[in-house]
Length: 594
Image 1 (spheres, one colour):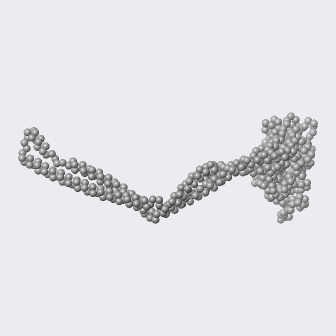
Image 2 (cartoon, rainbow, N blue to C red):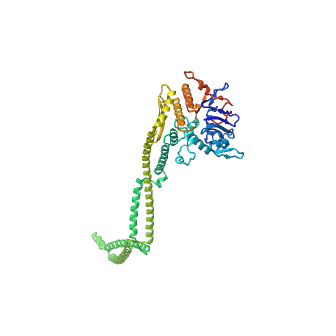
Image 3 (spheres, rainbow, N blue to C red):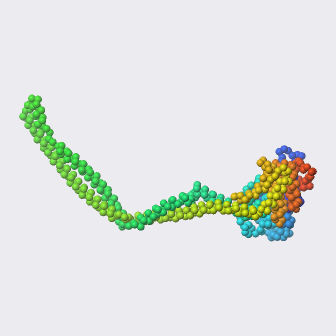
């Protein structure tokens, strides 16, 4: 239970709380304008102060790091493990929690010392202490199973007993922080309700594994990892082709014979091939030339001069003897020329035939030499070729080993994915079995929620539903006619929190002993339901000998009274906040939303 809250800040409005219902009101002053709002009066800031003193982190954007506040300390009087103690904390030394020697002895902690003798414990020690005294968590966080990553912690659990609006604590019943992962709230609520929280933790671990598998699968399919990994179906054909090439290469190497002068002989064979080609071309040219010259010899004849003389006689012209002698001289000369040309052509033909014979001989000679070389090289190769073949075999063998490893990893990965699906199904069955064993606790929580709904609504019914779903325990509240968002959704949170308040008092030796709600819980809620909620909260706090702290706007609080005339004025704190410059919780305004 929270006894009081104060600060070294001179303008801070110290607040004192008693058992039962405590209402902190924010008023509108006579000088308020329409532009002024009580949202800056500090109602929500009170929740932040309580969380700060109960071990919340003070990040850079925290109000406790504001330049006008960081050097001031805040203190709280609170019951821890049945003992009232006082602790102090400031923004400039947010990792230290200061308390007196007497209080340290009362709760059994050893103090560190400042130069001025002030005693303090670390923030982690303070949180562990609160977890042990309020929620029966082990002092030693290294103990199994609380050493696990998703084990419940004090800060995780206390958020349900003082929801923070700026963290999204009023968005849904199951989350006290909008950033909570499913595993976080499933573990927390399972622990608070007395269910097997380790099964909820296993679901979160399973989700982490599934997420990793999904990311890896996507990377294999689309990204660079596809070059390293792959699917078994894709790897097997490539491995088969590589192993077939290795077999052929091994056989080639096994039958390979090294010829000492392979390079020189191979070069000679290539040169002979070129020579044979040149000789073949020369032979073809000689054959064509011989054929042409032979035709020329056959066609070579002297001019037909007798025909000239006959032509002249036919026309009655008698040629003189001198002319005839000249014709004869010309004819004899032409016959001599023709004879000489025939002799020349025949000589050329004979030379070409002789050359042809030589070329044929040379062609045969070169062909035989090349055939002999090729026969000698058949099935053999140079030593360098053998080395190259062996290098190729090494590369292929390495590739085959890589593919075998990839296949092994792919098969293991695919088997792991299938195993995850089976384990998820098994885990759901395990959760269902656990819920059967914890049926009495679930019934108890359900009855408590029914009671709250019955107190709030005369014409509505509802249910607390705790389901063993395939993705872990699911928790929700259904209230008849809850299709419209707003007031009923807020009342679901109220019903749920009141149930947790009662369950914690029953489950833990001491429990936190308080429940804190700020005015945002009642946004959009009919004023009659607000009054019924406050009345019920007061009743539960009294039954539990605990405390229900609420912040409200005064006009909303005073709008309606319940029909029997009962009022809650006695629960209103003497200190009231206002919307003027100095009327807020801190006594001044600063440029940080609170």
